[in-house]
Image 1 (cartoon, rainbow, N blue to C red):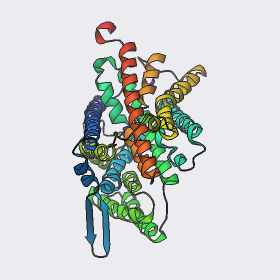
Image 2: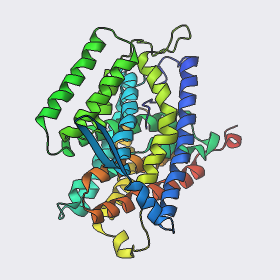
Image 3: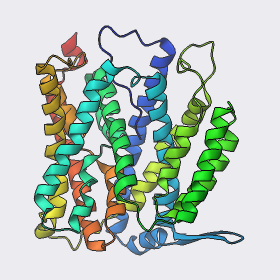
Image 4: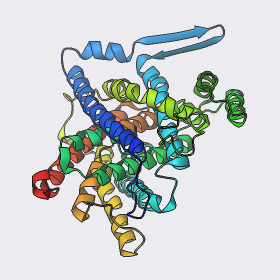
Amino acid sequence: MNTPVSSPPPSARPIPTRALRALSEFFRLEAAGGLVLIAAAALALIAANSPLHDAYESFRQMPVQVRIGALDIAKPALLWINDGLMAIFFLLVALEIKREMLSGQLAGRAQLILPLACASAGVVVPALLFYAMNRGDAEAMRGWAVPTATDIAFALGVLALLGSRVPAAMKLLLSTIAVIDDLIAILIIALFYSHGLSMTALIWAGAALAGMWLLNRRGVTALAPYLLLGVVLWVCVLKSGVHATLAGVATGLMIPHVDKRNAIDDAHEHSPLETLEHALHPWVAYAILPLFAFANAGLVLGGLSLDDATAALPLGIVLGLVIGKPIGIVGIALLLRALGWVKLPAGMDLRAMLGLGLMCGIGFTMSLFIASLAYQNPLHYEEAVLGVLAASVISALVGYLWLRAVLPSRAQRS
């Protein structure tokens, strides 16, 4: 989950005290949530490779049915997590994107150039490396977007281990790059991972969306009608062939954000958007994302060989995340700096930018999610999970060790 906040240029207005408190709370939540996320993934691997394997699979495949009249939704627990709970994650992502684009750090063009360019290059270069490794396999190429994502919670969890060494500007830039990654991922899911469209369901989805738009236009600020229509929208999108999580995105974009100052003045209350965002954030960080990680990261390692690990599909994901991400991000940052269009954020040099690029190679949540959409073949899916897990661990370890070596400690700075 990502909240877009980039490092403002020296000439930018100072961030008010309340906004600083909000940023501090965000980083605390994300860093702690990232550590819980790592623990959940480790627990999944332990469960899948121990005598608990059968119980773990029974949990993932446990049938869950909801029936109201003619409406009948029956799915295994794994799909309820991926299609249902992850829609709440995407709702939160949409809330954060809307807030930052209307009244936050993405509202100004000067603040947007560097993270937008870094995020874009950090998507294109990994996709090209994956293509180079898998261009001869049409089925494998369905997962070209797997190595393009960044997991902000996981990355901030690793950065938290470095304590005061990490400059605030690095956390802000990393957060902004990650949320733009999420926005690109949303577009990719909508364009490339929808299938078997049902026009009837899409029409009903359009009606629910129109209802939320009318509420917004009429100035309705109560959250309940938006959320009720959001549930209707989710059911319609689920039945339409478009991935159900996009209903969360659409609902988030319709929640009103009436305070143009982003509620940073103590004399003003939070907007409806911010109220919902603050309410959802702990649930997503500490419950939904760890549950998603536990349900999706349980790869059985016993039957894997060196040939499996070096196959084109997992290797393409590893190369894309571990090498493609830092090359794209650092390369475009250096180019823009050479052109005089941007400056590196305060407290960051080339070595710090390289460390940030390595941290962006931690794909995990969104990468696993895209892999679940891309591959119906269990073999390809397991190879993709292997690639994502390996790349995320390598990026986390190398990024941590690199930043520990190049970032000065508080004692060295003083």
